[in-house]
Image 1 (tube, rainbow, N blue to C red):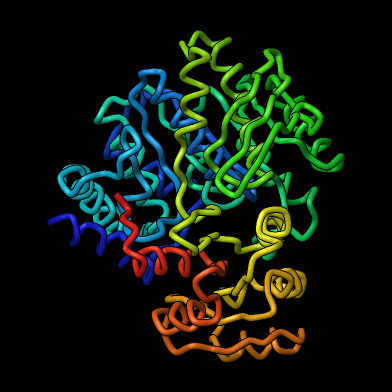
Image 2: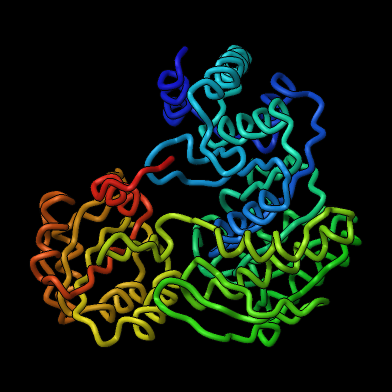
Length: 425
């Protein structure tokens, strides 16, 4: 099969796939790479885990290491999920590792084991990292942690980003319950670094780490000293074991400061394990990190995949601080199962002029229904038939000097990036 056919086969397993604990993923890996030697860094969390992974990967790459990065979901094209040295995997790599993957999946089907797309993607990523002999693989958890297919890895280091209320139907409806699922990645004796957390969340991490005899580093907010910030990034000093003075972050938003703190905690742990991560590489890696659709600018359009209340709140804080004096129009599309009343109010706070669209997903909330819900919040909301039409409407409303805040589902963000001509490679 060519690369397109391999990806279609992976997506095709949506119709039949059924998660079977870790068995499916392990069986795929036994067929593809039975011996796994690549050092893995495993990262869970509700918000910021992708940004955390991206910053750490950039630092390792600037230090001269060959890196693998596995994240989800993709924004525009499937190869984004698996990166080598920061570059999405090529068609040649998809064909090289994807064909054995599909054959292994079909063999499992003959034994009445039907794998899911995420199980296939996880096995593909780990096979690519082993086969291409990366020095380090950074693996982002898909959902939760304890039962996530990525939890088959045997990491050298774990990181847990910010915890919030998301996927509550699967992970629980309290912060402590969700933290318990995320803490499921903690392994016996493996160090874990945790983003600053609320007391009930920190208690869960402390208890799990103690049970697993895992060295724990719980970070706190007072370790961050903001220096300056604008709409394109920030500068801060971080006081950990080392004082990291005036570090420049290319990812905008105050929430990225604590993500960077988590990364620096992980850097210090890797140094203890013998990794050569010079200060210059750490500084350059943070300053050069690129992570699309996270407060990403394209002209006067600000794109942000804010798809839960924590994400929308972080976006609202950014807009209030850096865009308060500018005319703003909100262009937005969301998934029905993601939209909560608090999110609706937070989106409403971003602008009084709102244009809604329907994301390209079966789970999408139709634009008309979304506009009606926002109108009930006394917003001037109007629905568009297509994203292109919605962008045109938003541009007319914003004028030459205004800003279009484009926020919502990552499906929406990816489709908008494509429409704006932003490449995924």
